[in-house]
Amino acid sequence: MVAPAAGGKCEGMPARANTPLDKARQLQRRLYVAAKRSPGRRFHALYDRIYRGDVLIEAWGRVRSKGGAAGVDGETLKAIEQQGVTEFLADLRERLRTGKYRPQPVRRRYIEKRDGKGKQRPLGIPTVRDRVVQMATKIVIEPIFEADFKECSYGFRPKRSATQALETIRLVGGRRHWFVVDGDIKSYFDSIDQGILMERVGRRVSDRRVLKLLRQWLRAGVMEEGAVRATVMGTPQGGVISPLLANVYLDYLDSVWERQCKQLGVLVRYADDFVVLCRTRSQANEALRRLGIILDRLRLTLHPEKTRVVELGLGKGGFTFLGCYLRIIRSHFKGRRYLFRWPSPGAMQHIRDRIRVLTDRRRRAGMTDIREVIRDLNPALRGWGNYFRTGNASAKFQQIDCYVWHRLVRLMASRGGHRPNKPGGRPFNPQAWPRCRFETEHGLYRLLGTIRYPGGAHAL
Image (tube, rainbow, N blue to C red; front, side):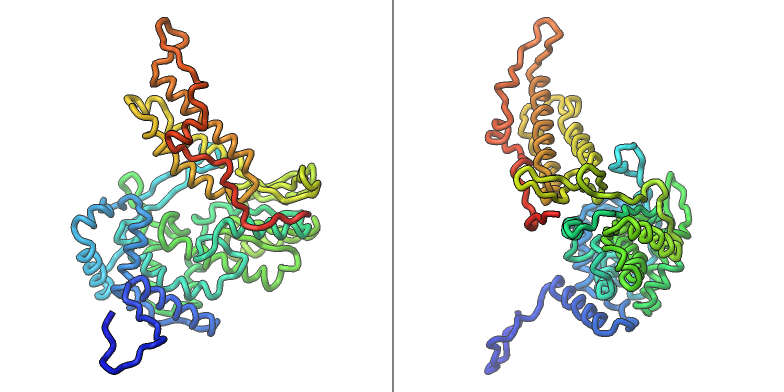
């Protein structure tokens, strides 16, 4: 920090921000306040902020922390660090300043969905260079749209989470909103109309160079099996800027619901996943009808097989939302009814599959220390458990703990040469390896006992 001039007073004065992070946050705060004060304002001087040195440094830090594979150019994060991050950002800044920056097509990759049906979801991987510029753009324009986003939206937003969305459902359900519209948008990211999207972005951003950047990313194309395919619809899943644009697009749904439909029920949306909690079936049916009308204006369609109205109550059904299964259960201790949630069957299958891979005997051939396996297992268990520990997951956590113990014992038996069906096979005593021994001696993470409910339960 620069010392104050001689004779100057500095008591009580806040320290000036000297780090790129502080400067970027100050910029975001100013933009958010300006947008909040003037809901109809269109911002026109944003492009030069995108290639500001502090913004690019912060963007690089965020991209670096998330990791990720290389794009179509094959350039990795590690290679950039070896060649020099300063030089990389200086070149990127100059390209943006002179208008020579051009995005490249995203690399198409498929990942398996967590629905247990073997279906695959397309994922677009931009180049590291494009990810940094997208992140810098997001840093600059996100506060402007955050000033407009509604309370019902929880997905991919600062200081908002899936847990908050699930807690809202629990609290609203506690007020006897027992009829739930469980909505699903058919092929959402592939169905976004780019014209409508850019029109909605243009309501707040009038800087032509920023709008040009966004259009370039939308139309950069997808490289699959060596061929580039043009994209005229949708936004590529996997792009840094895509979740923000997806929220901008669906903010129309949130706004119309708040103005015209909130008397029907409470909307809770996480990206393209949403539910509406209503008091009566007639309200739920009307909510479903209006949702179809609103989404039709956005040229989107409700999935006919996955969208349904669910009636909650003792002995009735439940629904799955954000990986949790929610259902009304009578408490054994107080005899009251509560809206409980626990990991869905798909979420349980996902973690079992992950454990099976990490403890596979063929993968662990030649292993000499069980602690190596546990070191790989713990992050997977901890991450999965941290997501679901705010619900009523004790029974499910115990099942996974038992499954982990079973897999580790099998692995130990295999390593020890236990072959019960073969002559001369050495015996292995599983009782010598109780679950507590893996936990105390080798540091195995235990799920049971980690439940941390975010608030007191409310009886229905």
